Length: 267
Image 1: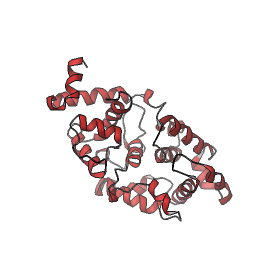
Image 2: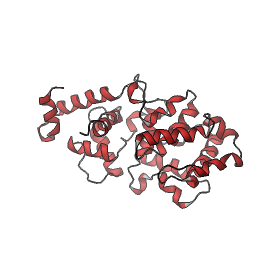
Image 3: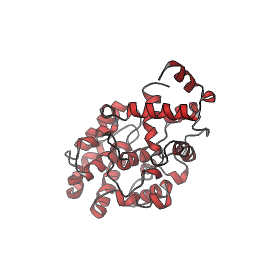
Image 4: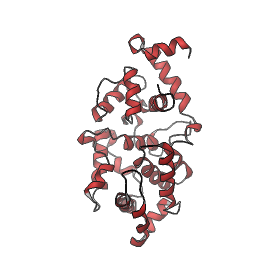
């Protein structure tokens, strides 16, 4: 992209739809590459080949995915290491005393009590369903907010401290639910780039919601893709609706572009 086009991108009022589409596609192609994996939290589930191991490592990595990315990867790796680097086998066979070490885990405000609850809930789910995929089965018919809320209700059925609920965001309460939407992108999107896994064929990519954080939100507003001021669920829906205009079947592919521009290029 030449300097003239870049200058136009920085001035959304001068952008044509085709300019914006070309820019998003070019930036998506730049960042949706295997080289993206190494420094991203998605690198942790990429160490596995078994579907359930990928799901568990992905879900826990996404759960603590805020703050310094190097710290996220380090702590997620440590957490999976506490499960003997075989998370599915660990969950199926662990006894109560095997959970005690998790009380010492911490990542920012995600403390040992939170960690113990998440591990316990995952054990209950995997012993019953053997995958997280069935818990999001309503996504195609009823939308992401309903599916995430339904999953959240199942996840919270295990005894827990009220403080732990903040680590499982609720779109029905207005949260953008960035980390769960990111996890869903990892599990559902299917392409040949090797970054996202595409493990859940029962869910249609077209129904996913773009993960929205401060970086993605700022870039989206500069590009005229988002008007809403707050980074909440309505903003995530607005952004995704605008991205669907460029790719109705796979709107969240542009998360790579928006995130890359915000984090790596300080756009």
